Length: 251
Image (cartoon, rainbow, N blue to C red; front, side, top):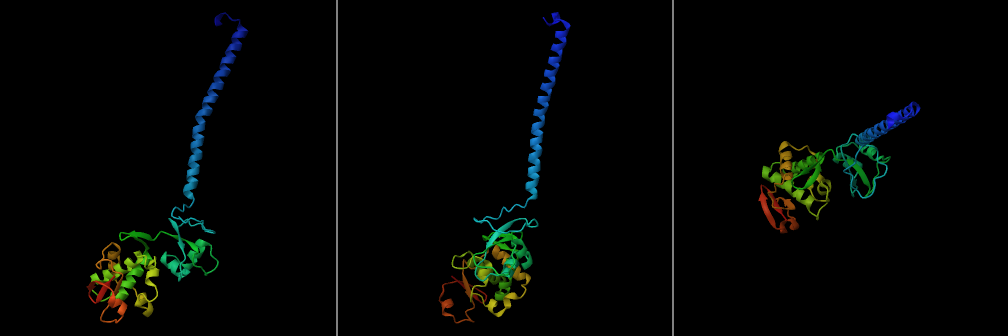
């Protein structure tokens, strides 16, 4: 029995037990500290990720080279340059100055080429129920064309003009960008005579938004014209959908 051991052996046994107890306590404390340290590392890692610009909307299959950090933009995407594009028009579309667009893409020149991929911000891009994504500037351009083509026409006729433009944007027969539709060669007279550049009134803006929300009084028309002002055989030969005011809307 332990009570019968000589004193030196009792002291040795007490020392051994005490050392074992200290070692056990140190081990338990080390194990208790480990999860807290790992949690601290995970927290710091998460903080670093939050501070890093996240380009979730950049979905192009190939990486965009030489892209400058863009912390002031909420989301970015990639725009592929088409024929007729310029830095001015692309910048205007996305609410940028040319300088800002060049800085965002680290461009040293104003020259761009068809097929070139440029990073653009999505801050001003909105989805509309008709099924298109447009920037604030593109909505304004839509209103400008409605105003130029249909000012003086009934409000329903202005909505109808907006619907035709949107129908073209959604049709594979026409360009797939709003600017491409508006500036397609010989498509709209206001581009040629300059009336497109007049500021639209609030009625035209309201008509643009109504068309974007899905109201199409034309039943899907892709063309419109004033039969009293044109003798174009092509336009007169197309099947009429509806006539609103002075405009005939056709397929």
